[in-house]
Length: 177
Image (cartoon, rainbow, N blue to C red; front, top):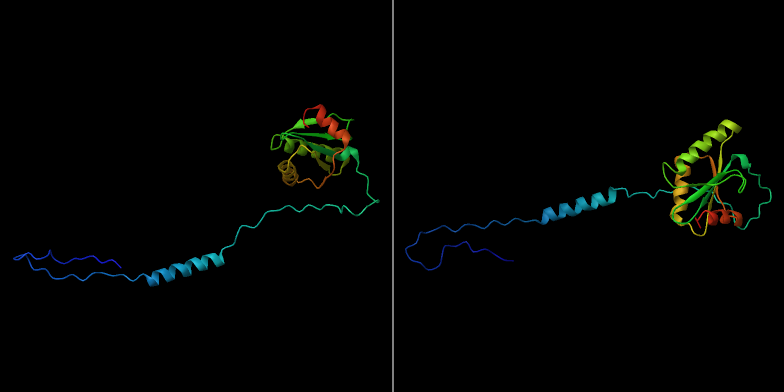
């Protein structure tokens, strides 16, 4: 360990006589022990961020379920997820009602979900059913954004399904595929 020499200047005669000062030495062992105990305490008592996940019930691919209930087209809103973060939606059957292009977010699909949900509730007295159909050109983020909108707008019944060739043609016609 290095030491600082605080003695008076060497060999000069006739200089002042100084008393030798005792060097101050602080033992930091107890401080280091305390620091490690505190670090250990905070590491063991902290709670890590829990992952946030949405529960989505998916059907079994292997099980061929033939007793499926029909989905009424008048209460169904279909979301077609296209390329470049764009989407189309329509209420009813594809081809019978013109699709509307929309974006993700508050002024886009969220507004359409809220308005159509209220309209269907007023007309039929039942809740709206939403079918989300991602295309080959859409990305995973688009699907997650659509599922987030379902949670935000409190849609009671929604499903993720396969897109049909007719719906792909709708996306191609409108330049979203």
